[in-house]
Each structure stands twice: as C-alpha cells, then as structure tokens.
Length: 203
Image (tube, rainbow, N blue to C red):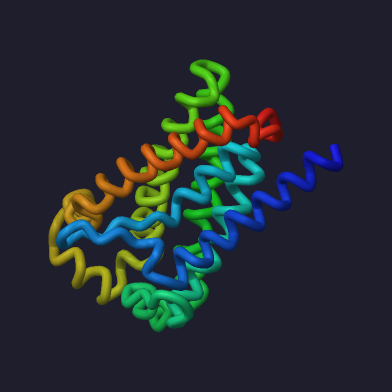
C-alpha cells in the first residue's frame, strides 16, 4: 500500500511538472500550418488511466488552475481569458477550472468502464479521445452558459446559431487535438501498461 501511494505521488508530481511546462512554455503547443494543437489534455488522460477518477480529477484541477493563471498573463497568455477575467473574475475562474476538473473525473470513469469491457490498452485510446472531446465540450458550454449574454461573446457569435458558432470557433483544431490526444495518450498508456509501470490502475 505504501509503495502504491508513493507511486501515485511520484506520477502526480511528474504529470504536474509536465503540465506546468506545457502551460508556461510553447512546448505544449504543436503548430500545424495555421492550426495550433494543445497537448495539455494528455497528462489528464494519463492520470485517469493510472489512477482512475480521483487521479484524473486532481490533474484536471491542476490544468484548470494553470489555465486560469493564463488569464492573468502568467505563463502563455490567453487573450480570451484576459477578456473574460475583465468581465467577471469569479466566473472566469469557474469557466476555466470546473470543465477541466469534471473532464478528468469523467474520463477516469470512462477508462474504468472501458477497461472492463475491452481491456486496458483499448481503454487508453478511448480515454485519450474523450479527454480532448469533453474538455472542448465543457469549456465551450461553460463559455456560453456563463458569458453568452456578454457583449464580448455576442460579438464572437455574430448572430449565428450557438451550435454553428461553437463548431466554427473550435473548428478543425478540436478535431486534430482529439486525434493527437487519442494517439499519444493511448500509446503512452499502452507502453506503461506493457512495462508494468501502472500498478495502481486497478483502483
């Protein structure tokens, strides 16, 4: 049990360090032509694979806090985050934090359920996909729910249907992020599983 807890703490520390590096430097972003693909969801997926809902939620919370700090210009600045913070700092925190926390928790459940049905390796790829998909879904849903009536977001929507706006706003970036996160998270999870370096994914 002690070794199990030590392993969890060590992995959480490593994933947190990676997430900080991704959030505070351009390393966490892959430019593909005009596109910009983020890797920030991958540590959440790995935490969910290794430690289930609790680990996924914890790493999601770390991502949420780092994302909020970007609204303040700490790390890689977020122009949208800065605008939302200027409108309502509390709601900006909720919009940045809760979606990532919920994302991590739910993909931990998804991994556990898929693992029982199909095994650990396929479950890793499924978890990677849903980590990116739910992150985008929850982030945009919170944006519309909390700031949809503001002049700033109404200007972004430009009179379009909300669903059309969301699809246009996240665009092909979201698709590439889902593909990237699915492949990398699944491959890393499979490698760690094969090397027997995930002794705590039974929780």
